[in-house]
Image: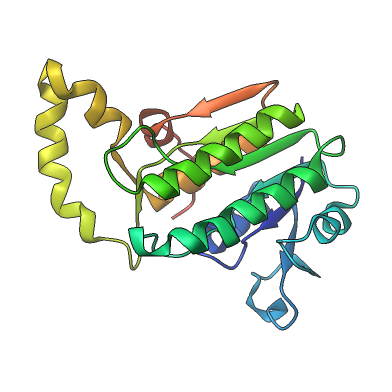
Length: 217
């Protein structure tokens, strides 16, 4: 079983992932801002610190062998370009610096690319991937386009369009690469990555994420 540290554990995906990791028998610690300790799920050990600071990340890692990086601006939009660099990029820089040479496996949520919109968000997440490569980390990089779940349902109206596009050879690849995934599938894919650490860099696109299973509803 893995000894896991999660950054962003109180966010959209982190709140769902931590209990699933515990259910699978992993030990879980969460790096949280002072005052947020009560937000972590029962069974998770809260470690106070700053996810934008490499020293804090390193201290939270301790003897952990796996780091799951989930910090990011909530509800991304083109208007949040500055926040993407100040939070998303700064946090992955801190996590990579804190984890390099210390953990056996780094799990990172990126985004499907290339894509026609959200260029700054994609640029920042792609830069995060490059940092992981440059550090020589064994890593699983997940590239969802949009994760459907509580408070994040509006793109569901596009599902019939995606299904139609997947039937047409000329649009099939793009529809699959930019396909929607559900939160339960995303959590299963993240937990599966922790269960089976990558050697080198493993990329999971939406089709692979949707095939993930074994999350307790």
